[in-house]
Amino acid sequence: MQLYMGEYLFGGLTMKKYLLSFLVFWIFLAEKLNLEVFILGFVVSIIVFILNKDSFSFNLKKFDTEKIKNMLKYLTLLIKEIITANFLVAKVVLSPKMDISPEMIVYETKLKSDINKAILANSITLTPGTLTVTLKDNKLRVHCLKKEYIEDVIDSKFEKILLKMER
Image (cartoon, rainbow, N blue to C red):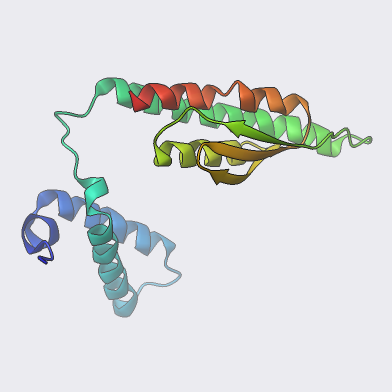
């Protein structure tokens, strides 16, 4: 077994960019910066890169511009939904009469990719008022703070964009 000493570990420009970004992230998270913390961050960055090298090996020429558009659309939608849902949940929580009607639903997704299923589950959880409890096969068990939130889960804008990205 070769440990990817060539392009991946010490010579490749791509690897250097990823290592540098991991290391900067590590330094950002570190409470204090000294030589030991820096070396540990460097070693951890190398390990993270080696364990995830397949995720980082993509060809920009083959990278679809439509996917980039959908990713940006998804991110914009997620931010908008998080902000909107925060106001709705704040209204529910701060009202004198706690107007909640909690429901647990099982939602079957049409997504095929495990990573997209995880992204969908996390997006549902990130929007206040909904929480993905489990994700197994194609089924998500989702807790909704109010019955009205069920429709947003079933008619998921998130899933529609992710389905476009799977094509």
